[in-house]
Image (cartoon, rainbow, N blue to C red; front, top):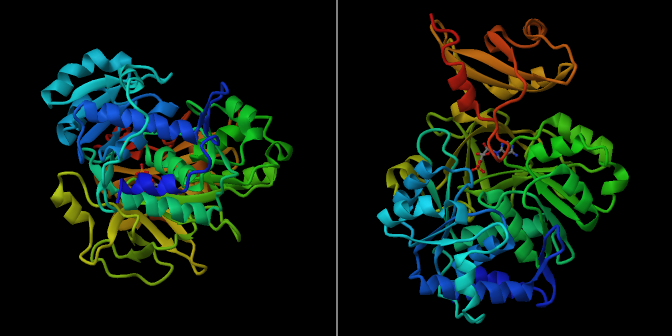
Length: 504
Ligand code: AMP
């Protein structure tokens, strides 16, 4: 068996002259270019001493060559390890020490700072810039395009993705060839991707969404992508006529709704809009539908599990839900303490099992053991419920649950009430230490431009709508919520900012 995942994707590739990636400037990388380019890079990796199972850590700007580097790692039997471009040298020190890669590929700008760190952990350094230039591609240019793929099986590691680590140090999630392949094939089928599709790709490629959900699905369908270096509403609107589908985080949809070019006419040819990585506000879903006639398809996944659930392709895409477990994925909701299954409709911890679920945390057997049940279910850390129609609802991360005076408050319930008020764009509800209650329910609210929303009025309006213990003890009106690059609201930042709010 040659390199499992790459071999399976290669078997599905269309004719060599078909496009795989097109850039906004009109540069086209065909499937033929992809095979030859990854062959050359795979040779270059081997020449740099990268052997089967070795990690290749990559912190580079988005480019077609960066995608080829991922695929070349698969062909060389190496483990691809992408790193967020925002990480600082001090953070890279931790990742390189933990992962001990054989090779680090970085932007030429960070090379000088990185070399001493990489050397300390025995890694070599190559460069790759946003234009696809650098020492890696110089080495690859001198190599032959044919490469005999290193043999890898279904359970061998294809990638390690570090989790964003909002609690404690970030951990490396080990993803096997089959974790990635099985999920890509399921999604191609579920979302009806074919070789005629053109995906508008504006996501970063160091995260599971832009890297695996988007890229692997396109490869497995033999389709193509329009590859934007980053999200830019004007660029998306300019290129949309060439696309058939888009995958985005909720922020993309919020920003596009502010673009006057977004109309029914401008999106008539589109087949599918997918959202994930953070909750899509029900309002955004509704406004998008009113403006374009398209119901955004929301799905739920995580670094460790790939995609778990999705709203249906045909049938109701219900706003505020993440749809049904994907084929092959078993999902259950349990009591977070004891782990017993809860009756349908009750809120508890979401656990999943299936070929999509990762192999454990890199060099961290204790953490791996703590997050799996004995029967193989992975404890996601997300709280949610399954409604009477079988749709899964996520109410937030378990660690964001607020316990006040002994009562559980699910932030989403309070946020939904606040978000529905006139003049409110969105809100984040979180707990901070409180001398009497343990935690005090606290809200940060973003108001619409020009709207006169005041904190006291929000508190007042909630009085008749929520039980007393769920009502925020303090509401702040803020210009925006702190978010990470994937659009997730960083409640840890809010908790930290307001930690002394109720201190005596
Ligand atoms: P990451 O590993 O960075 O992809 O983050 C995964 C986490 O993002 C999940 O555990 C959820 O908490 C959250 N998430 C992903 N998709 C959704 C969604 N559609 N709705 C709500 N939360 C989501």
